[in-house]
Image 1 (cartoon, helix red, strand yellow):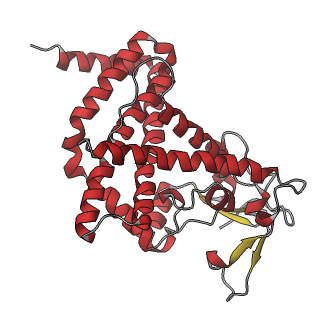
Image 2 (cartoon, one colour; image 1 turned 180 degrees about the vertical axis):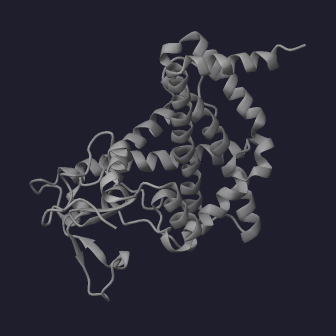
Image 3 (cartoon, one colour; image 1 turned 120 degrees about the vertical axis):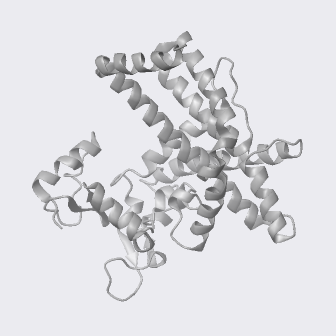
Length: 326
């Protein structure tokens, strides 16, 4: 395993790309191979430029390599350490996955067809009316489906932004900023407690000296930024969850209402504070995990159709032959 020659202390901060990250890291495989090692201020990175290697490590050996690295900024300061994406590997993460699998497994897909049709029709109507706003339409459509699925919430169709959709988009922007490699000193310079020599020391033994700097200290503006990001994170997780629990009293079905019912039946009592908090973050992962991917796929499709009009015409002809055949 090779990589660019690092500098003392700073590591590969100047070799790590700032723009076009995926393409830039992929181009390094010509020089260093398909598995590349880099580190930036003590944070270690393994770049995989092979789908086979990624499948081998994260699927076949998933029980060994499924843990998440500790993120002081995005996890502890911003408050996403309870989110599924940032959760360390263990029993709680397995429980998150079991709950999600129960709701989203393939055998239950037919339950969501009517909702998918409704959302798709609204998306097509919006694209016909204002095609130049296609990215906004894609985001609203993806948000409408996941919000309805997770919380039983119907995204507003009228003019203006929907509060929950806007909140989620802002959180996605903040999360991308909070997890940017090399941006935050608080994620670097770990003070490590004594432990056996190991390439990957226990996460709980790592502490960041910068994390405990008071907000009034010069250069501690990152803590003020994190406090604002934490407020948005907590609102994103809590507000739609509380909506779903109230709506369930009126008979509205959602992932939240169904899962609350199953958990309370299994426990034989109402959910306690810990179970409630746990389910809140499981529900939030449906929106945060399902929206960005849908928008990325649909926007990529539109880009490809614009770049390859011949393929678009052939696809349209095939659709017409099916939809308009007698």
